[in-house]
Amino acid sequence: VEFAAAVGSGKGVLGDTKSLNTESTGTTYNMRDITKPMYSTGGKIETYTAKNGTTLPGTLLTSNDNTWNDPAAVDAHYYAGVVYDYYYNKLGRNSFDNAGGTMKQTVHYSTKYNNAFWNGTQMVYGDGDGTTFIAFSGGLDVVGHEISHGVTERTANLTYSYQSGALNESWSDVMGNLIENKPDDLWLVGEDIYTPNTPGDALRSMSNPTAYGDPDNMANYVNTSSDNGGVHTNSGIPNKAFYNFVTTPGVTRDNAGKVWYRALTQYMTASSQFSDARQATIQAATDLFGANSTEVTAVTNAWNNVGVG
Ligand SMILES: CCC(=O)Oc1c(C)cccc1C(=O)O
Ligand SMILES: [Ca+2]
Ligand SMILES: [Zn+2]
Image 1 (cartoon, rainbow, N blue to C red):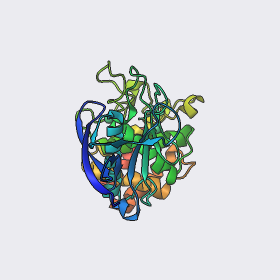
Image 2 (tube, rainbow, N blue to C red; image 1 turned 90 degrees about the vertical axis):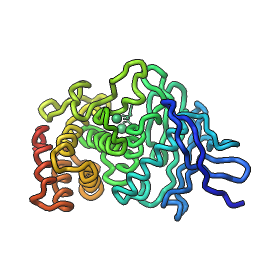
Image 3 (cartoon, rainbow, N blue to C red; image 1 turned 180 degrees about the vertical axis):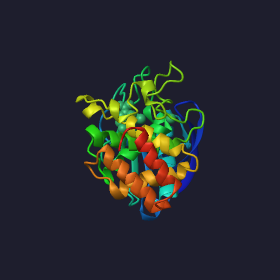
Image 4 (cartoon, protein in one colour; image 1 turned 60 degrees about the vertical axis):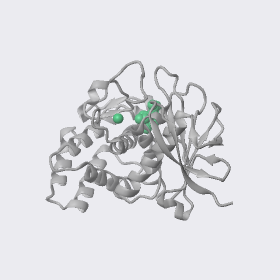
């Protein structure tokens, strides 16, 4: 039987209704998006549920009427499509592996699980405990962050500890920010899924890392062994460098993304340190816009401002 692309709908984690790309089998519907360019080589976006267990990928979500009542799954599916589109349309990357690999995500992983992660082949989202976090797929910057861990793993493969780990984290925050592109709280990370009872807070701030206790200058680099050498804290320094760069007059968000992506995929390696990231972004900006471009001047000043010379 020929399966066909269909459009269903469902409410997301924050109660908003979204249209979903699904697959009709003729009698039922699968949460499977077969509309992306990667489908020409068999690539799809598929969403599964772990039913609060830890077996992956779990069970592919189905519906008998193409109306979907699992908010975490609705957002995971829809936002994965948004992330695919950004990488394909803005950066020319065809899925996380640049080979049209099927993007799989599993929601309802474990119980009250306050985390989301890329496990090397797929995305995994916890539901949160309902107080510190709600379902992790409910934040587009979070979904972009997590899938970008997959991109990083397949490219520079930045070792997830100390400075290279902080770069790994920062590049995920940057891509999540570019993909979410939310004007009202542009620079907050994870605001949609963090502490539902405390409006206006977030996991991190890229414009003002110190507001959340994270450094925004090399002079305040946190020397610690916890959290793999402070990867979620010291990311404030490259995050602030990106903020400086992208907010420089004449630098567009799209062009800033092109510079950061080219640096990651062409110049950075597993052991890259902050100074190597500075050099990689300067070289990428030079490649793309010329040695005397606004972008080269801006990115150089951006790193100088955070004390990375
Ligand atoms: C922006 C998403 C994020 O940082 O998620 C994590 C959380 C909440 C805990 C531990 C690790 C991560 C991660 O994805 O790095
Ligand atoms: Ca955000
Ligand atoms: Zn991360």
